Image (cartoon, rainbow, N blue to C red; front, top):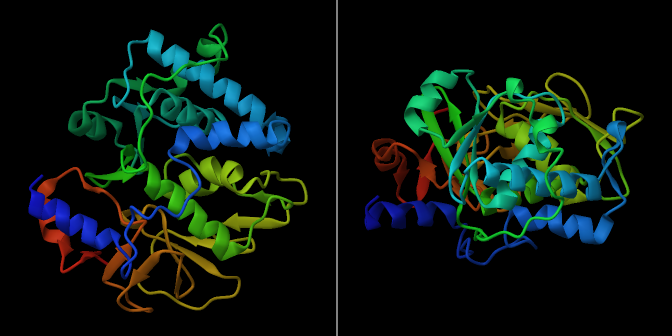
Length: 307
């Protein structure tokens, strides 16, 4: 990647004169999110229907990191995850980040295409029986590498394109959506998405730990759904609208969520509140895997989106 392109990507990640180096999240990486929540709220539920507390998620993540190390996985390696049953994928991502590796999830179901383009160090599928594999491993892991916020945390592969996202991208987008919907640690919420979208990553994997609000299907205070609930998730859209209930608009190049109705989430902005074509801010991706796409998309301090 040329220094000129790197500069253009960085400019698109700024919002006004606020640069992404002025970090707006209280964690140095995603590994420290599960560590920190365990220290503060070890006995608090994360996935309440299954009785999974912060402490249990933390211990499973440590076991996962030990298992991956035994499998020959190294920090910064990329691990492709096929769809696993709930909550295996949710726990696995924190094990990968505990090790200091990066993960790949697939939006279009084309695992062959993703494998060919990304060449992951390991593929974890349902047949791996992952939870069974980690049972014998220690519940303490001493990381040899601690990622920085700007390091790659994952790749989202969809429609023949790979979107690279940093630890900061995921944390700041989760922060933005938490503030948009006013979700606090004394509340509960429910969402039930397949582990094949960035909306799943933010709402189902990161938000329960980031917000401290347990996820439960039993009388939740807040429900997120595609065509139901207190907040509707829109993956395919032509324009932003003011709706009741509010709509959360997904833009993968902006990590996951771009706006609630016509209002951009915190630290994101766009050129038009009905038909945005250019976005900027702290949730803007690290770039596509394909530099030709990056050259065409990062222009004039913004990221062009095809909507």
